[in-house]
Length: 344
Image (spheres, rainbow, N blue to C red):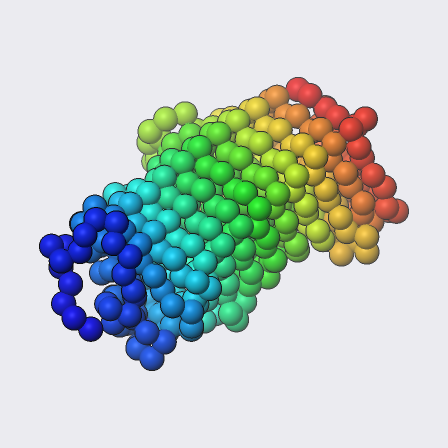
């Protein structure tokens, strides 16, 4: 390894992670520190590409990434260790991570592997996994973020992704639940959540492929920085397998205990579900196609369901929905096609 500074690197340089001390034979602390330092150094020089060679790299704890115009090309490399996590700071933008797997070996439901506070970032062919499996969210895209792209993201061994902010795109990818909660979870408690596009995603074993709420609205003691609403959401060409619902829309709610909450007066509007499937031939989890349950003064309006095909056996009693919303359930396989569409 030789010393590198921002003066010795040209803008747009391609450098190896190994130059910074990263290697499969290094400790989890060394690799974590080297990774954050490499991204920071390339950013200070105006951007560049960090190449990570294939292999399994010990990686423990949280690496805080802060910078701009940096691409990490990981070639299928795997960072693995207890509480393994990448956090992109709020000052980060135009950071791309391609072909990297993150594996958390702690078995702790409170940990998560990706924490996105930056904007205009890209995650392509990234895999997240808790091994052994544990509950909790597997990743966060925070409420102050804008214009992030998740392309062919996959995750397993936990629950889903907290998705806030606006102008995000999820294209392709798959997820397999180990916690039984929701997959893509849209929320708005401080900033509005809007212009979200989810296309071509496959989810197995979750409560719902996409859920909205219950954290949508205002809460005592929290001052929002904009309207607390989820607006302009498109879910298309997605498949939910062995899930309780395809979509669960539940703004507003109240709960007691250690995580007491009371979300009031939230709004969900302009949500479209189009050309999607919900499959559960054996009735492993399926209850209903779309479950809408606004609470605590919340409003749900202009929900469009166009060609949601359901092939499922419901072994549990169907949920009770407001009559103006679609509710399909059966004790034998059935299909709901384009002829069963609803607009509000």
